[in-house]
Length: 163
Image (cartoon, rainbow, N blue to C red):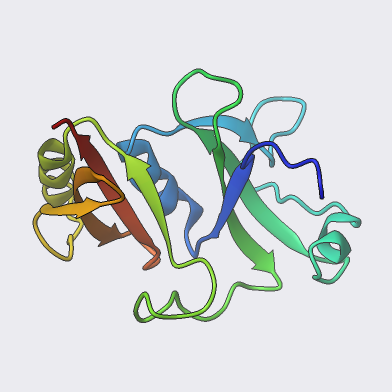
């Protein structure tokens, strides 16, 4: 058995890095690494193009991207989001048309007040699938809803309710 102790990061490929950053900042994420930063601060026109990165990810050595690592809260062991806008090869395709596809289907975030989260996303122009709904699973009660990020990745928001 491998010595796996936690989820370190989840990668989300995006078509427009700034648009995705805006969405995930709305959810409370903060930038912890700008992979495109030069020694003189950040330069959004710079691209990440390390020749070993592409092949390690199953892509060509000439691969280039713009990327940011995001995190919730201040715990250095928190799971992170790795947002990448691929320049070369250019990202293609679309997110899953629905959640019954093989692969990672959605990301779920625990929230303190699901109604507030729903209203804030609605106010920001997101289109949740439904209003928050109540479910009982695994011996607990939760309210949740789902919405899509700017590229159509399904993001779920869940509040765990006390009995």
